[in-house]
Image (cartoon, rainbow, N blue to C red; front, side):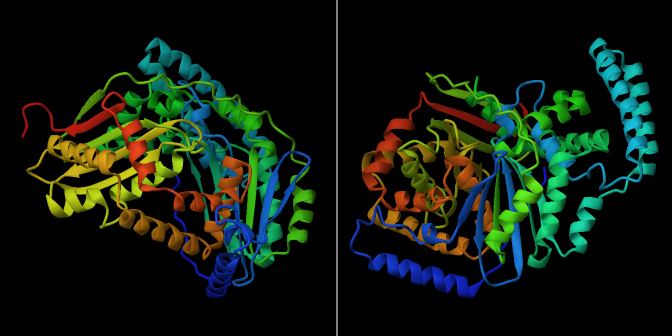
Length: 509
């Protein structure tokens, strides 16, 4: 999977402006604090919805002459099922392979070869189902040979090179359980080039080098899951915790599904569900909003709508007893514990978010002070919620024991700390520390155009309103010790938890 790393570029003038807005907000005594707009809500964001359903949010910012683009499609791993897992992630890779005009010397010749490759792949799937390994090897070789022939007509990585020559950076993409996101930063005087290329990519993608890229994704699965103790433990933990909901499915896909995915299936999936009506475009940087909207109407409005993805109707049934799973691996032991908790839309979400920081948010957090510094039971400990946001998810705590201590010792210490929180709740000092971190993080996020573009796109995609991401900080600030104590008591029961441990093979110390 192509990985997303947030940039750390800073614009000092913008930080000063944000602080001034924050000060003005604090001074406004004519409305309750809970209803006053946050500094983020006062950003001069402009919105449009094109006739084809594409939602645009644009934030002009003076400073560095650059502009950041983020396109977020509201489709990911939860929209797949056994047999099609990994499709969204594979598409993430393939959409960098060019179009009918970008990346080719002869599109007609290419397509003729691809038709022969796809026919061979269909036959390969049939003979694999029959267990004919000799035919599988023969057809695999034929597909590879046809791929070598097709390279005569391919201009490899031309999409990337066009943008790089124009001064682009951070060109990349990422796939999650609930979205597929493409992003880039380019000089402001090349902004129109992005619209030209993205319009072409939306309408005329060519999934060239399909079988080569599918092999790349299969190798990624081997590296991140099948030969990775941590990856294997994570996948086993989700599979045990979720028996029905598609959160149990790996975004990278199951190996057997990846082996059988065809170009026709993947292209059909793209044409159906990756339409502009299922996308959010966030643009942040040194741009004129009116000009941006003109380019959007000229280049993106003609892109046809797609189908709405089928709603995810599966709901995980109530868990009525502790589940435990053991992964045997000759590696450092590890522990993962998960409790079912509600989605990001639930009223308990802010208290649960605060709990993650109380437990493991830095060196002053409870679990770090006890497990890592105090009793020295573990070398690391983290907590989080996931694997998504839109549906009921897991509150997860993971830790690596410090030899000679065991996963059992670490697990008991975690339960003891949770028991204290359920009885006493966190202190006001603990919550105050976390709230200060949240406030500082809000200001840091204003430093990065790309970071803000991600934030705006995610907020519109998840909540339908770019302001909601900033209001979240206000809700976190309102969390009380009793709120945290209440959610610990409600959700962190033995019957509601799933425990996964990584242990050495039987008989080994």
